[in-house]
Image 1 (cartoon, helix red, strand yellow):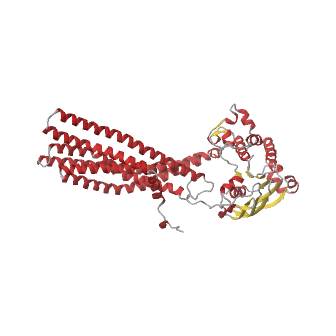
Image 2: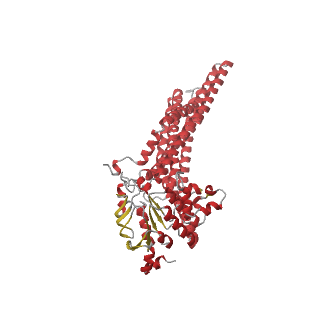
Image 3: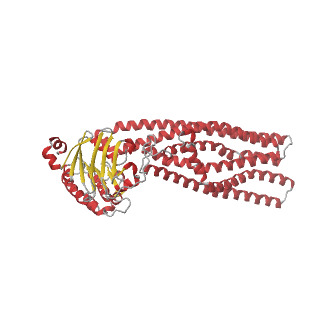
Length: 567
C-alpha cells in the first residue's frame, strides 16, 4: 500500500483534473464557440484591410455591398458565439462549483469525523463556498486560454502573409510576455493561498464567537473576544492588501507589455509601409490587428493567474476531501433492543470505567466531576473514536469498533446538553426527516406543549437560527423532544433538564420513564427528579463507578451523594 506523499498524486491537482474531466463536453463546446468569437474578432481588422485594398482597386457599389455584408457576418458571429459560448461555460462552472460545495459539506456531515488537521467549522465553511467557486473557475479558464491562443495564432498568420517579420514579432512578443507573467503568477498563487487561510481563520473565529455569545456576555468577556477577532481580521486584511498589491503589479505589467507589443507591431507595419514593402491595405490590417490583439493578449496573459488561484483553492479543498477518517468503522450491526456495556474504558478523566445497562433498563449516572461526564459522552457518541481510548464499548453485544457508524447512529442516540437548535420551525427541529411516529408523545413528554400552545402556528412556529427567539429552557426542551422523537433502541441523555424549573423537571422525569419504558435509557445527570425516576443510579467519581443503588437508598446511606445531588 502506498502511503508516502511522493507515491500518490497531489490532491489539489487531482481535484482540478476531476473538474476538467467531467466537464469535457461543455469545455469542448465552449472552446469551439469562444475560439470562433476570437477568430471573428481578429478577422474584423483583416476584413477592413482587405476592403481598403480592394476598394482602392475596384471602386464599385457591388464591392461596397459585399464588404458591408462581410462585416455584418463577422459582427453577428462575434455576438452569437460570445453569447452562447459564455452561457455554456458559466453553466458548467456554476454546476461544478455546486458539486464541490455539496461534496465538502457531505464530508463535514459524515458520521465519522475526518482528521482535517485542526480546521474549524468556520474554515470548512469558507472552503465549501469561496474555494469551491474558485476551483470551478478552471472550467472557464482553459477554453478562454485556448480561444485567446486562437486569436494570437490567427493574427500572427495574417501578419505573416503581409510580412514574415510582423508575424514573428507577434509570436516572439507573446512568448516573452507569457514567460514574464508565469514567474509573477507563482507569487500570486502563494499569496492567495495564504490569504484564503487567514480569511478562513477569521470566519472560524466569528463562528466560535457566535456560538459562545451568551456565555461571553454573561461573564463580561465580549470585549476581549472582540479584540481577539479584530486581530485575526486585521491579519486577514493585511494579507488581502498584499494580494491586491501583487495582483495590481501583475495586471499593470501585463497591460504595459501588451501595449508595448501592440505599439511595436504598429510601428513596424508603419515603417514597412513607408518603405513600400507592404500595401496601404496591409498597413490598415496590421494597425487594426495591433489594437484588437490587445484583448486576447490581455485575456491570455491573465490565465496563469487564474490557474494559480484555482490550484490554491483546490489544495485547500483537498485538506477536507482527502483527509482520512479518524477511525475506519466495521461492517457489523448490533442486535435490536440490545444492552449497552462500557468495559474498562480509559479516556480523559475516565479510569477504567465499567458498567452495563441491560436492555429495556432506565439507568442514571450521577457524576461528581463534570469533566468525567463529558468524557463519557464523547466516547458513547463516537466523538472519541475507539482507537482514541483504552477499553471496549459494546452495543447489543457487539464492540463499537466492529460496527458501522450508520448502525451505531440508528441504534444509539447520544443527546448532548448543548445540542444545536436550527433555523426552521419547531416541527423541523423535532423531526428533521419528517418520519417520526412518536412526535406528539415526544412533545408531551418533554413538556414542550406550553411552547406549542403559546403560538398560533403551533409546531409550525418559526424558530430563528440557534433558537434565538426561544428561552434557555425552551431550547433545552426542544432538544429533548428531538431526542425522544427519534425513538432509538438506546438513548443517552446528558443533563437534559438543567435549564427548567423544579416542577417541570419532575414532570419531565416521569414522562421520560413512561415514554421509554421497555427501551434502554441512560441519563447522565445530577437532577434528583431524574435520578429518582431511574431503575438504579451509578455514582461516577474520579473516573470510576464507586456506588450503585436506587436514588432513595443512596440518599439514605451516602452522605457524599446527598451533598452532590441536593438542591
